[in-house]
Amino acid sequence: MKVLFIIATDEPETAYNAMRLANVSVQREDETSVFMLGRGVLYEKSSTEQFDVLGEVNRFTGDFYV
Image (cartoon, rainbow, N blue to C red; front, top):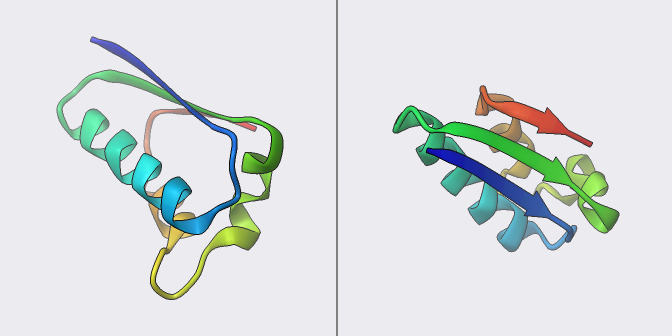
């Protein structure tokens, strides 16, 4: 299955959960892409101790576009 995630927010919890779901999709061997749009490009600054967005992004092995 082909899956595309579009993340257009810098809200930590939302971006974190979207990236967790993208990582699950990769584990299921789906062809997975993530596209950061708008405020989503600020994902590096949106990580918090509770919501490690950057950690999930670094774990992601699919196609990633900013």
